[in-house]
Length: 72
Image (cartoon, rainbow, N blue to C red; front, side):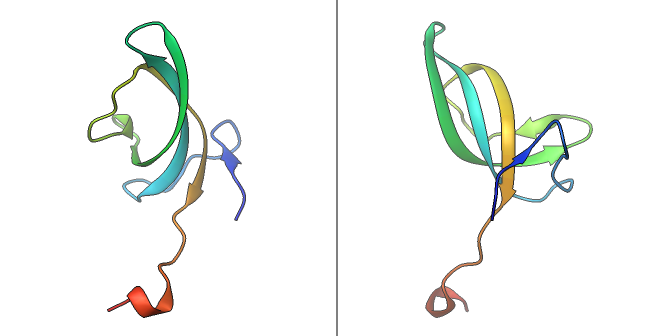
């Protein structure tokens, strides 16, 4: 799988995906993270509890399938 730029294509609505997030911790310390998020046309990217501000999502990719032995 390869990363997809949000400039080229947005993820399917309400589907969990991996995203690359850039922002600031404690207001001034630059940080980049890979997080799980979902996208909503109404609310943009949705995060449960992200400890950074001024969030900028640049890329996304579908979540990989779990290992065969982990599937129920």
